[in-house]
Image (cartoon, rainbow, N blue to C red):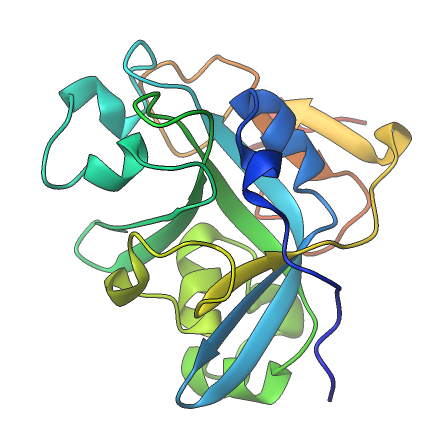
Length: 204
């Protein structure tokens, strides 16, 4: 099946306020190419991490071996390991030296669904990619891709179909304890592929 989407987003797309990038990534297509094949999904949930003053952002530790790509060029992949189990994929935003990124939290599967099933096991399609660790496993994203540009490389984010404001909901970030009240999570409100929202944050 042909990969859906169009041209990769340009570097200037990411060289903006992180909150705006997080909002505008909804509807774009995240694609990963590995030796096993190609898998992709439409982005339906994101979170913004804003820099050294954001206690939930890795940049609070300053420039380290782990965070160096977070300080890098806009449109760079920042991939890190959590809980000794999961990889998480982020797109670096703003200018070089302004450490901030957008965490992609959930996708609507598009291409390579059977490959995703091989990687994820016997789960419902909506559960293949409805979480940051799940989507990395499904697409084959690992630390080997940390620091690569999101154009002409193994990971690309392609232009998709823009999501209108009336289909977008904003909530505080989830799964964190520091700066947890900041409203920096964007979701496609009617998508069944969004990760589970805590009951106290649900809308409607």
